[in-house]
Length: 124
Image 1 (cartoon, rainbow, N blue to C red):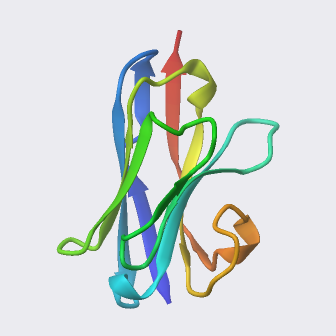
Image 2 (spheres, helix red, strand yellow):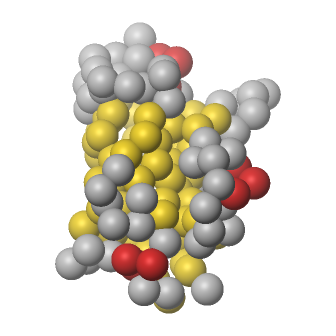
Image 3 (tube, one colour):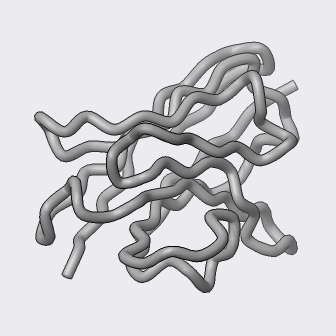
């Protein structure tokens, strides 16, 4: 079992920055890959970023590439999403997720555990 708790969301102006955190507990932190997804009202859940169990490889959705950075802090069992140059279209509920097995990193069905989500609102 893996428990995930997101934090760090809020209201920010366009062009600003936020850092989301995902605190993990349960299964050994180094034993699973993780990712961030987001869901805006009326839209499907969208892949944002993913990181391998070792932290050696990262992946990003096209809409956030170059602006967002995903990382894992093994000392604190926490995953982060640093979001820079935020745009109004980044407004959504952001979810962290853990993936025990392989498969496509951008597919929600390949993730086994999910957090409750944190709201990010970017004003223009």
